Image (cartoon, rainbow, N blue to C red):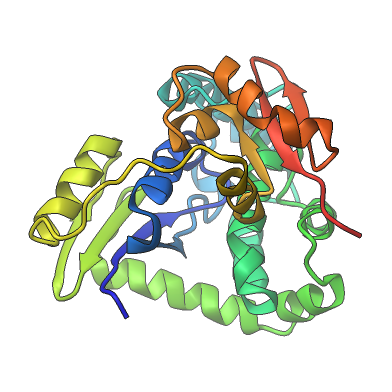
Length: 291
């Protein structure tokens, strides 16, 4: 087997920063093709929301403290939209409640998805972020997570078994142990590895920096190659990413703007193999799943 670059991201499904970095990852994926593989380590952004609420608000009651924290968090999400340009919708944002006080359920859900179908797990992670940040659904609640499970084409019965029997929780705790061992203190963080060489970055990185690190670690052996822009390449790409933003497609295939992306995907829209989902300040492409 050819040696590959391993890119490990330490993150949480609720993270707006990881959502906004998706265009960078899609460009890495297409430009380094079979020379790079992606992994995600669940790192628990919010252990207990009551550790983050304003103490003065908490004096007025838990409901008030949570309501004000959700409003603050919504403003943080909105401020992150400019990083990658992916649309963020915070209308009626209520991610946390008096009963849902941690992002742990989202982290465990990803680990359950991995156990059920490793090939679909990353697409499930993307849809979980989409549900949280674009559809503004309270995905800390189990019923909302299960909606994403169904939408992702995962076996619901197997997912519930992995989620409830402790196996997903055990793997999640394993991820947290990795974070502690490496001293991860900022999310998202990245571990880039090639053979015995590695680089850990605990800050946001742009595409050029990733490419430079890959060049350095591989001694120039792994190089960026522009992807083919044809229907076959697009179909393969949508198989891996059945829901994806126009901006990610723009970056993945080196288009100047999303108008060119719309022309590129037009044959699949006409054939009914995909559809466009319009959202405030942007749009996504969704592959129509068979069956």
